[in-house]
Image 1: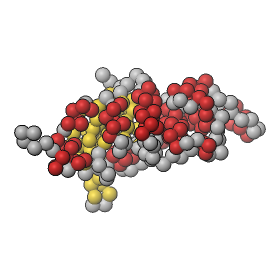
Image 2 (image 1 turned 30 degrees about the horizontal axis):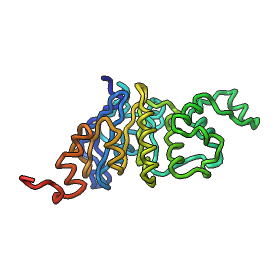
Image 3 (image 1 turned 180 degrees about the vertical axis):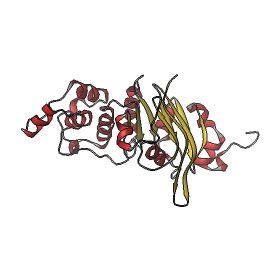
Image 4 (image 1 turned 60 degrees about the vertical axis):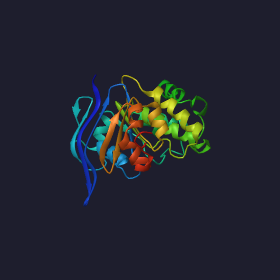
Amino acid sequence: MTAALQATGISVSFGGVRALVDVDIEVPEGSLVGLIGPNGAGKTTFIDAISGFVPCRGKIVLDGRDISGARAHARSSRGLARTWQSIELFEDLTVAENIIVSSHRPTAWSIAKEILGRRTSATAEAVAILAQMGLADAADKMPGDLPQGQRKLVGVARALASAPRLLCLDEPAAGLDTNESEELGQRLRAAVTPATSLLLVDHDMGLVLGISDYVYVLEFGRIIAHGKPQDVRRDPAVITAYLGSSALPTQGS
């Protein structure tokens, strides 16, 4: 199976602190891969590194193309999209317009229409993405009128609007209640297609283990476990990292 992402030997240092050390992560085509770990493990740093927002060592191959030396905007144009922990929406645009702006490829004619003050109508692609995220009824609303769970979904929809080869999601469930998190998981799972793969970083282990095809676990900048969710859940190194050695079953129990 073709890999949407092959990241090999990714290392990041901030001064004397080694935030990532020789991290290898692969996201197969048409899959949802989870990346979990305790606070400060280096999860967001990994997304920052592969998306070009922090310098790193190692090799990054996106859809068969080496993008290791490319700048952030070039990686984005080649199909690597990401979300951020803080929801950065255009508050003065409707939900539909937020999606359209993200998928917009400006032409001389479209620029002229904008200069003349003609508002952009919702495109079929934007309508489809909003429906996929369960936001069809929110298309004409302003982001500020939406509850937190729907605002998160707008952020995901906006990232999907660029038709990425790989979408990296940084803590999309932060601040959501159980029901909102469950809905988010269903929407993310449905967003995976042969053309779009997802890399999901989140503190909600239930969410990540519940919807991922494969999971990597970081601790202190190193991969300590990886495998199918059911195997990672039982891995002694993962149990120790999250709950401490006292949580391990004693011999004979």
